[in-house]
Length: 137
Image (cartoon, rainbow, N blue to C red; front, side, top):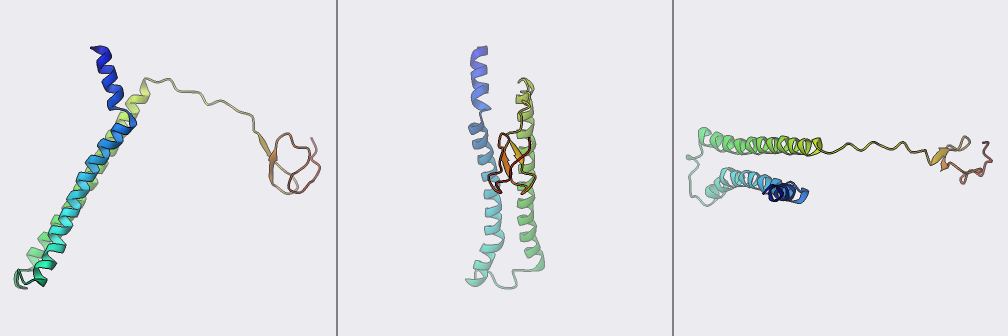
């Protein structure tokens, strides 16, 4: 049973699965923004043009209601995106706790700067490839 749970954890926390889950959640939240835009801006304009509603229908309160519904959808999207960000950040931190940190290897530089033309050249070079100056060792 423990092996099964470990395999499931490896599958569920794999990058592709997490990306798909985040994409689905963000997509549904963005769908709410598009729906609010259609319901609160595009549809009233079409209703006015096709005389479904008269100009008297669109009072200040009705228009402010449309605007507040749209802003509410945008705020919901931002909250969902922020919570997902924190969730994924927490999962990534938890996943890295058990792993050993790889020490960065101190590597020797492979290039140097020519003192004459300031170009980057190989460390073993005795002449600059750009200005052909003889380099002192």
